[in-house]
View 1 (cartoon, rainbow over the protein chains, first blue to last red):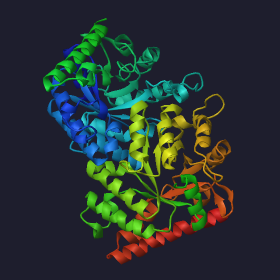
View 2 (tube, rainbow over the protein chains, first blue to last red):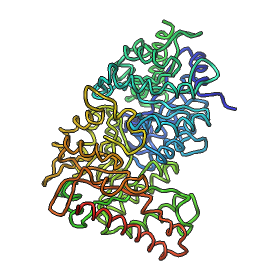
View 3 (cartoon, rainbow over the protein chains, first blue to last red):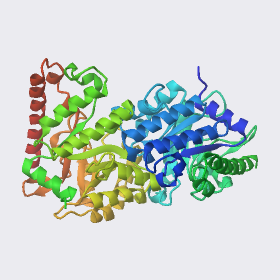
View 4 (cartoon, rainbow over the protein chains, first blue to last red):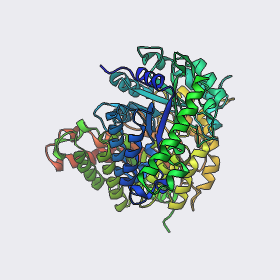
Length: 296
Length: 296
């Protein structure tokens, strides 16, 4: 029996001493020519297989952003499927960033595709959108329970206009808090063997105040924190919703993509070794910052 | 220059005398064995190509539900790409039901994949989720403007638990109304040559009262109405948000999937001709009901 997602995530973060998750965001014009012709899905695939090799044993999770592979259609989706398989083979947790959300049998389809072992993606976790109601999350919860996996529900996103609807006052509390309150039963349904639940919530690093409020509502949910690095939030802001644990502050993963994948020195690298050195340097900088932030 | 989505949709609905859109929802165990081995994506593809041939000249649009193709991974996505191409070749409007929603460059990716001519899907319209804020819809609006296409924003969905968040009181009006109010500028940006905007909004047929309120907020937005047929709403309820036009009530499309794709007589059909007759009968029943409803 595989350990629950929560336990695997927290154990890895404790042992690494930081909560870094690396987002797999392909930007065709930023992938060095070393990896093949610009704009081809095969080029992105080679690139991310090399990235994965560098990340092995260094990060808690990887998060393929399917929206940036989807312009390649089926070929891009096939790359995501293979990258998730390769990450799993290396023992790295996988979060499919797909922001799915639908009703009834369609939600069943998305959940099975994302989370079922041996299914289309077989990821450990998938991001989902709550606008259609709590019932529409149930198929993802069921698949997560069966597989020892997770779902990461959008609560307070990192973008500048996130507040358009998420911050609307709903009877004395903003919408995002109402969403968080609606997730409390799911937190319990996905309890792990340790202190943490396998329920994840997306809480943008750009809003550390909200992260602390969210932690009060969902004390055991893991946070998936985007917005650190290229989107402008500091490491300290990114872990604002974490709580003290045996090896420093803990309570989720902090995701960074562009700062690690495309540091300036990597774009101009003439050789694979020079590229590796540049990405390793960016990775070390991020893990060092986050390790310092959780050490407090 | 292709006519705007709004004008194409309304012209077709007026000339057919009904607003039917057929959802392409593959349920592998309901596709007759006539089309191939149960559960194979090739079987679903053959099935929907035959459905398309039956629909040619009979319906306003088709709406592939990608969430039900995604369990097949890249193979399922490839089927959706080819079905959209085949529908386009027949001059049938295509609505990619994907409920996408993300921020920044990822939203750009989803929008290009869904709507760009020659892109991954090249659909005329894609369904999107507004939870991340109005700014996150902008890439879809831009692609729609460039291509003469559309986006269909989830406002009030058809599922039983839709009200969990959509009905929360946000300062005197429910969230779904706040979303609709936020869409007013997009309605203007996507104005067609006639009375209608190419902005679509999803308004479940199961909530005719809300549909009429939504029509008051967005007088020129086209409605994409799910929930008619298998989900229990009547034809009259489905067109509750329509308004009088030169050829009867108009203002969007009403989607039906299971009632047309899988009528009882079709499941048990022993020959392709018997299957065709059964599907044609279901199609005639739905178009007849909707024609009567718009004729008032």
